Image (cartoon, rainbow, N blue to C red; front, side, top):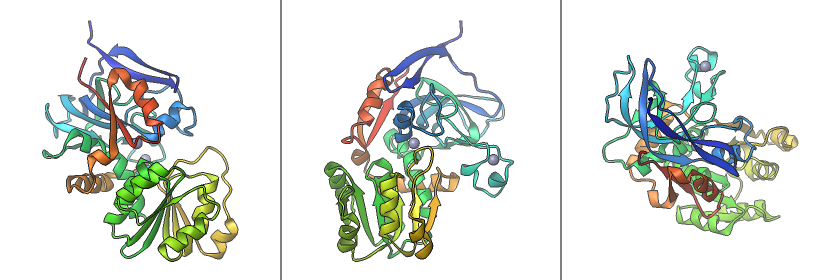
Length: 344
Ligand SMILES: [Zn+2]
Ligand SMILES: [Zn+2]
């Protein structure tokens, strides 16, 4: 009889279960990896709630994955059994114009491991060997689990060029907003304001080094923000991507400034002040995931100790309790919830 493994199946937020399925077998150029730690992402709870524009239910989650190689398919010779790895989950075609120009994060046929393919919230998973990175020896599994979430802000920040001496606003103090704060500071931003609806999340942003943390719901938010940091912002990262946050972004940003849309917007139309975009020469740019370069930068940023794991990893659950991990991750008091997998 083939070995059975546990794998998480998400049908909805109220229906998250563990199924028993045959252990996957690595194909050519693939690795078989035993999961040790896997993060619950905002996109996972979004998808489970049926709100993610690009993840269909049911699905098998787990794209923020750390694990140990337990078998190698033929051709996957760069890795050996026992190697500790993290997944870089963008699965790209390698042939389209975007891939050929190095921007495989926006591949025409992009699939994301653990979003459009079965992920790592399971005992074992298979993954193409070119989609994993070795974890450096001194790095813990919890640190390694933060590489994927940090790589997205690293990529977003890289889009804005040199941030040295510049003023930055970050809308939303969830995990991505807070990691954007760290990435922007590392990139040289002089003054950073963070906004959020919740006081607890604003306090956390201050603890992590924001120069100001402002109530996102305040009618005079823009005036407060300009007063707090002395004028309009060179760059605004919208980690919320809703009508209100985009309206604030186009009001907060300086003439000729740059708005980077980091959050996943709702499907369909979101109103934007085109009059301001045109009159102030505001540049609005989307950002999706990352490439290997960003992954390496996120790895070395974490290895340098710039991110304190305890500030981000606020709860852990065993694989059997994946449903609880999803529920916990909806709690605004949590930052990053991790699922730990000890083997069946
Ligand atoms: Zn994620
Ligand atoms: Zn492609």
